[in-house]
Image 1 (cartoon, rainbow, N blue to C red):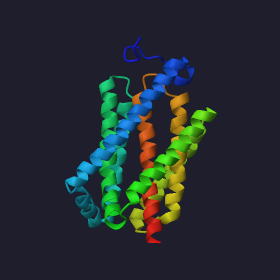
Image 2 (cartoon, helix red, strand yellow; image 1 turned 90 degrees about the horizontal axis):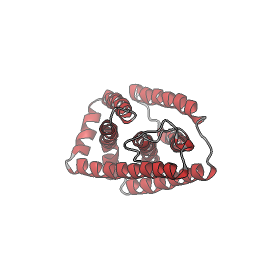
Image 3 (cartoon, rainbow, N blue to C red; image 1 turned 45 degrees about the horizontal axis):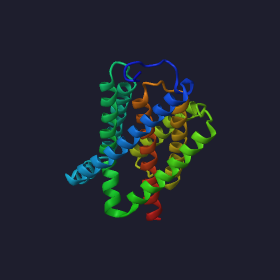
Length: 235
């Protein structure tokens, strides 16, 4: 019986081994597809010269970046709602696709700056991020530990981080290397949490939502690994 036709209310950890393995496979295939689509979109947007335009737009006013972040958060909220929707599979994929496009756009100025002033950083950051995510995923799948206790910590930490970022934009101070390191640790916690949820929390029909959550955590880590490498290069 196909999972497309019948959705079980049981969480993945309660499913038979074959069904659980199928869910995990579907989730990570979607994560890989999202990362590939993200990379292609970024490359395409850069080829159109949008990276330079994004840099110019953000240089107009420090409030420009705050507006971009607000728009990204609004789009992320909508994308997550769609991805978690039980109304239709099409709406779930629309949410995932919307989020991937939003991530590609918000990464444009950072990647354009990195290519201009720190050649090679993007490739190194991708390798480091991949290694960290692989190690954290290995920990979750080998220990089978439930990291759901990280949820409240990440929620509070996320609001604090947003406040610090907003303050840095409003008052014009640089967050620097230490903040990037802290945010990489935060993203690592998010990877642990979302990977654990893949095993313990999601239902059988929620692989699209699970893949969006994992993709978001990986993108967050990549962002701050790039920031960290650029800061270290400046030092």
